[in-house]
Image 1 (cartoon, rainbow, N blue to C red):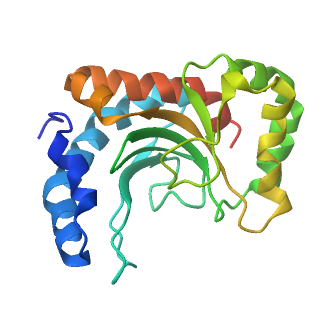
Image 2: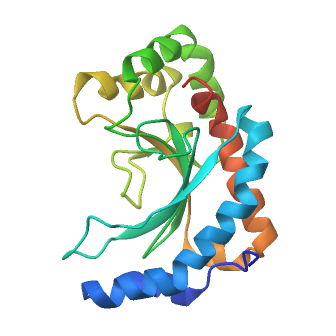
Length: 209
């Protein structure tokens, strides 16, 4: 099925208090839209990142009690999973949709990625600073960025990935946030274009992997 856009009811799913109710709504209402996004966005990422990007829709299989505060489709270079590699995400939660670039705690090549980052940190930081609406998130599930990159100096941006190797659970999460009103104004094709535009701004980081 084609992606037909998110609705106000999709955001309200994350207000359902009980685990069975929220999970049923995520699976029945939101996951079909994430699979549709996977089919539309995945093939269009190849010319942006220079290689095939495989989609992975979150299943939340490890959760049995606490309902998830967000759900997503991730795009990464590995067919079998995304957590051990750099990846993009389209994530939806109660108060926003986020287009994210992530290197998570399970990323297998943190030291190698950091060496690549340090080789061009100044240039990359200046480029990211110009990215409209891009922010730095302390955690992949946070709805609000700690800071917008345009408000940081290029030196501050260059230091952001340092947590990757300083801490075992270090992560790097950058991206653009859209509140529900913005999402609802976008027609499905415009939403896909907005996601691809955000991923295009973040693609230099993806290609370091």
